[in-house]
Image (cartoon, rainbow, N blue to C red):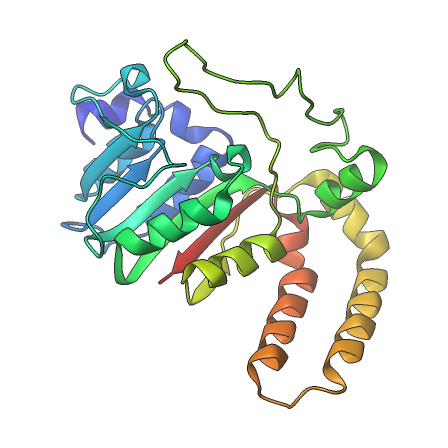
Length: 261
């Protein structure tokens, strides 16, 4: 492990970062690959990727907040990225998309810079878990223990008076919306990876899964009964149904997705 990776060893053992570290550590094919760490923050994932042998290009809206010896470059993910088209093997975008009012633009830019077959590793709070769904039903909030994000609580984050700013979790996204936006942006597939399990979602799963399964099947049947079997819309609806009823997606604490171009 490099000196910089050791600096973040404890940080990588907590929350969604632990899930990302677990997954990336299984990737023996990253050595020599060009990986872009977008909105890299303090640099913990950049250090991990470097330790795995990747050639990492780190970018952030506030590069001065990074703890790495080599500071990242400036980039605003809501603007065209300063990266050549088709030049990158992988992009990492952690806990960012829920802050973005124009999520499609960011996904399109990431797809542009990726090589054919390139991958986007994306994480965001899961609105598709059963806890997330119940939270939205009860108070349109992110967690059962919290009220919704608002104009004051979300407000403008990180505004230092120089035009660099971002917002709170005003644009939480679920699996279905991410699947649709990624397809429009040019990605050909989406795979949801394993994350930590939400205990609340597991309890809810025991009670509500049969109901979710039956209602989802009924909706699928109504949409497909007049569609040509094997057509594009037919395949899309089956994909939506599988995403909606997959037990992993319903109990995952975090939404961790691998999008392939």
